[in-house]
Each structure stands twice: as structure tokens, then as C-alpha cells.
Length: 103
Image (cartoon, rainbow, N blue to C red; front, side, top):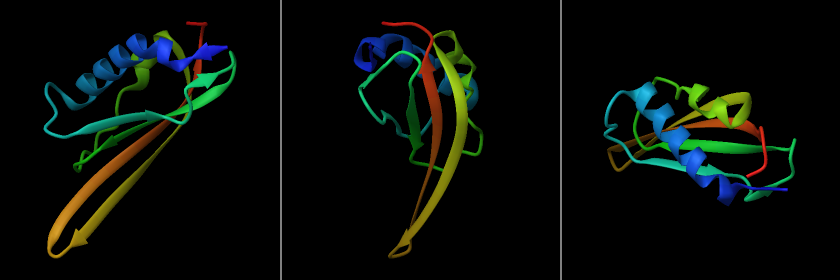
């Protein structure tokens, strides 16, 4: 069994590297990273979602995740909301991941 909370350091480091490489130095946006479950069996996939609260067109570089995870399918969703004249944009990238080892 693989507990994702135990993978927090490699996942956090990989996410930081992926976001920095993709978006350049500091990103002027809030980034939310979530997973669809906290415990998975070895050879079982889970979904990592990265949501950015601004309009960013570049896709995060998933190469940083490949040290600890097999990266499967990828998708993205863009959302624009206009409420009382205020425009809010967000983009969510989803990555299917599978751990390469227990930890």
C-alpha cells in the first residue's frame, strides 16, 4: 500500500519544480494541488489536480514528477466567470499518476 501523505515531500518538491520550470520564477497566482485519494495500492493510479486562479496558458512541466511517478493521461479545464462585471479565471490541469515505488 502506498500512502500519499508519505509521498508529500517528493510530490511537493516535484510540483514546485514543475510549476517553476513551466511558469518561470515566481507565479503571481494562487496554486492549489489536490489528489483524489490519500491511500493507493502499488500499481494503482490516482489523479493530481493543479488549479491556478488566473489565466495561464502554459502547461505545467510534468517531467519533474517522473522521478517518483509514472505520468499517464493529462487533461485541462479553463473556467471564466463574470459576476457583476468582475472577471475571474482559473485553469485546472489533471494528471493520472502511479507511484514507481512504495513510500
